[in-house]
Amino acid sequence: MFQDTDFKFVPAQDKDGKLSIPDSNKPCHLRLVVSNPAPVQEKRLPQTADSKTGFTADIRKKEHPPYALIARDSFHRLECEIVLKIHDREDDEEREPRTVACHFPHIAGEELNELVEEDETLYGMIMIQFQLKILEQILLFSSGQDALTLLICTDHESECHALEVYRTLVVHEGKIPTQTGTQTRMAIPTTPKNFDKLINLMDHINQDFRQMLWEDQRDNTAIREYLKSNPCLTYFG
Image (cartoon, rainbow, N blue to C red; front, side, top):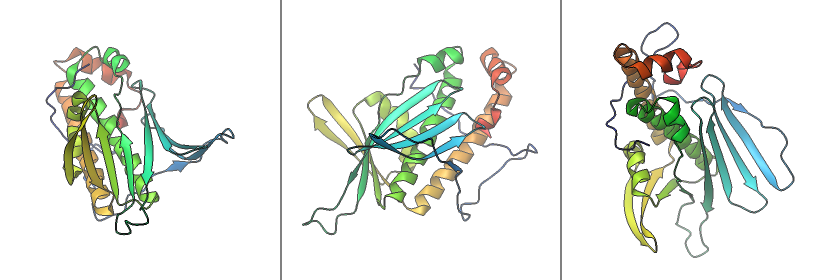
């Protein structure tokens, strides 16, 4: 698995092949699909499904909290489950805002690495796309729960490095000593302004990635094969 790759970020194109820059002043909309009835022991919230990319995000509430976000990218063979905990105000902390906290886990990338023939550039591009889509869904969930802040925690330095792209949205970051080492905590506001910033970031990264794919395909066999096999190239545009 590759985690120290240097990434070059670039934009995506619309149906006519033109670069598409999002207008941060326009509201962002997601297409939600209600999932099938769930078992008695857990409640499933509306599911986000993007048929163009194979990405799905399903938030479930079990009989006893917390919630869990199940994110999958079927084509790129990625899957991640993140527990979401809601921290409410205490009676003696009326000024303390509601917070959603999650422990960001390690995302297994062995199958993705095999899919892209161990190409570090492709691996990094696709993994960052997946991480950003996850963050988008968690921010939407947090906003829906009236939480003003999303707190992301990670115990692994390698995962913290992989989440470097999140830092453009972070207002506070700290390291907390634990029994197993050091935990990194990132605080991200759930404001509409910050969400629009994320959408714009995703769009620009998509465009840069797409441009990189087309520019490097002549000299990179792995990229050529990927472009041939990917049935949903709109993942990058």
